[in-house]
Length: 366
Image (spheres, rainbow, N blue to C red):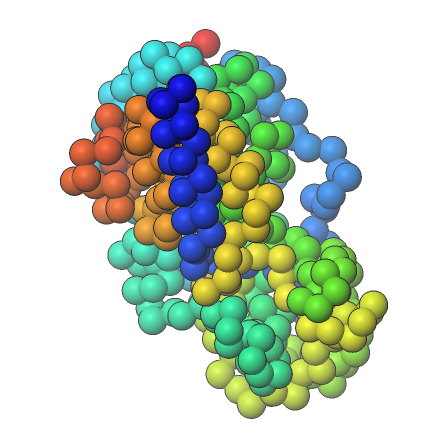
């Protein structure tokens, strides 16, 4: 009885502390001439089916990945992919059922740069907007939406990579209890994973900060473009095109022009309030629903794998602490330093790319 009481106290403390987060994230939705061809994957659309054991064949008919729009270079690992895959397969086999926490490193092979690697966004001085900045000033929202309307065209054609398909494959075969992702790109769901908690929200939806009304981002940005024909014309004349090196990894773009402040930002259609991407900006908090779902996934698992994340933000790191306190073994697959390193919390540490290790791991578990 005492042991059960202690575990409940630990769970409640972890739940409360999980809300202390500051992870940014955005994905943008295009529209019209300025913003690339229409994005096909939306809510209600059929997800990719990956039921074969060999996940490499599952993407044979998928669209080819487009080139990165920046000078970002995908970090390379230790060059021991097979050994790492064997170690991870052994870890998962011993645990039988694991949960995953994924981050930006999961999507770099899809053409989406990360933040903290040597050529990532932070190395170039990029500072994502904070929740307070977005809420406080109309001019900040004008700047945000101007850059985002341009920046999203780099992301619109991104598709899942082999790592995403591998996790979908493992879920279908019963190895994965659930995925907790810090990414807002929706690529896990597009690859066919169904047990996904988007810890920091989704970039495909915008939400009113006053009444909570939601609408698809594509629809919202289309309206924004329609209300700003002169703005769109001037921006097009400046030569912003897909692949421009000024585009940043979170859908932002360095326009560096007073044109940003002439954008008419569309308000909520229900109450005339402020619309914001349904993602967690720096200084914002993780929703109660996401906290509950994430802790539940970890709690039901026999092992936890961190894939492609430095887990620097507390919303994710607190899940690791919770797992450690409950004697759930932890494996880390990430190139570069993580918050877990040198803490003694991890049972397995692998320095390889997710899109290389995860497919081989899935095949070895067949």
